[in-house]
Image 1 (spheres, rainbow, N blue to C red):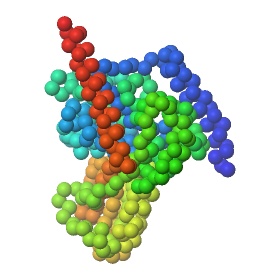
Image 2 (image 1 turned 120 degrees about the vertical axis):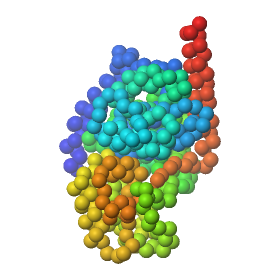
Image 3 (image 1 turned 180 degrees about the vertical axis):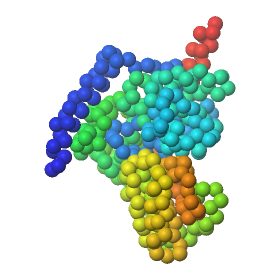
Image 4 (image 1 turned 45 degrees about the horizontal axis):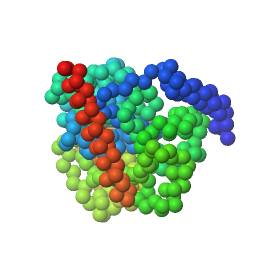
Length: 366
């Protein structure tokens, strides 16, 4: 009922986003195209839809054959302009998600810039041996100043956009008509088994166009990993003995999936939840240490997310936390062997457009 008071604001927000999109559609506001392959991974709602693990999937797919670069705005970083990630970058300078990608894939170029056109232009100034063959734009579906060659839209299976509202009454960043800009739509965070009838219902609800492809993915958690080197605590028994008390510490949009995942393994769970992309402070570290100390039992650990640990590592963390802190890595999996079809579509796009880019470059030098 309280959200009804937000509907007029949502109407204003929707009107503004509608006319902004029309300005791009009618080319009053210009979208810049680039000659090399550019893939955008984004969403139409606020909150987590799994952009980072899907971006990591694409990096894994492409990195053996191509020089890959990622570009995002670096949400909640404390720097401005174009910043290229290095081996000693911190989340405060590039953002937690770019840092996570750079940590996992140290050999690729990871850059941030609130102006994506400028960011791409800077990446293309690199020397030939490191100049990217393909650029992945993270969270750029609404950033229409760049026109990607391939637009991938992620939608959370658990939050149907047909039942959602525009901000601030709901979580939609723009009208659901924005789906029409996508070449590929991925329903994320799906259950392992989806009936064919459910697939058809979803396809009808999002009004899939002939030029669009629909895929379904689910999230898989990896084995708990120590957050800090030198953490020698053995926790193999976590998965078999239900012997550990867990302090779950998160700063993400929706901690429910990780809580649901660890519940069958944990003896008991206490939880400290912060807002999405929360910058941890020393006071937070003190509170976490005190909470851990008051928990019962001799076998207790702190579990956090892969994204959160990037920000926690920026802090001065005492021994009690560092020796007890573990994170859960996640990855995506396509359902029903759809991954092969998706991989082929991505690889064909990059190979074809990389060849066109190289031909264009050679022709201009003649």
